Length: 199
Image 1: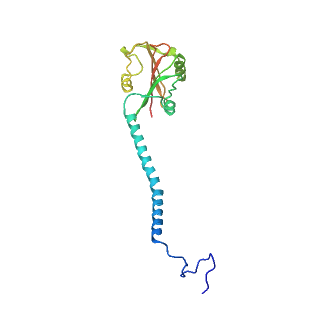
Image 2: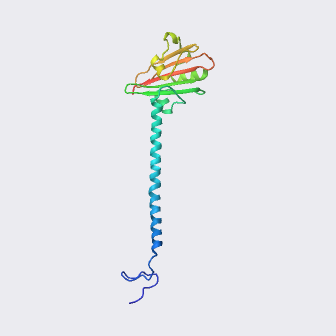
C-alpha cells in the first residue's frame, strides 16, 4: 500500500494518521458552538420582545390620550391641521387641541393666543376677516361654539371680554368651523376653534 501524498486526504476507510481528539477539547468546542447559537437566536428574540412591549405601551399611552376629555397641550399634527383646515398662525402660544371621532362626525378642538396680525392671518386662511367677527355675550348663549363642545374641550367662556365669533359653514366633506375670540387683551387675542367634518 502506498502512503498518501503530502496534503492529500487518505482514501476512505484508511486511518488519517492524526491522534484522536481530546474529549475535553471536543466538549469545549461543542459548548462554544451552543453558546454562539444561543446568542444568535436569543439576542434578536430579546429585541423583538422588548420592541413588542414598547409598541404595546405606546398604544396604551395613545389610548389614554384619546380616551381622556379635555385639551392636550401642544400643536395639532400637520395631518390634523390639513384635514380640519386649521392653520395655527405664527406667532402663537397657549396652543392646545383635542380630537374626537365617531361614526357620524369628527371634531378638532383647538385654542391658541396670537397677535392682531396672527388673527388676521388665521381668519384669512378661512376666507374671513376680523371685521366678520360678531360681538356676542357668553351669558346669553350668543357664541357659535355650543355648550356641548365647550364641555368636551373644557372651555368656560365666563371671563372678561369682549367676546366675538363666527361660523364658517362648508358643504361636506369640507370642514365647518365655529370660532370664538376673546379680546380682553386687545394686543393678544385668544382664539377657540371647533372644526367638524363628516367622515
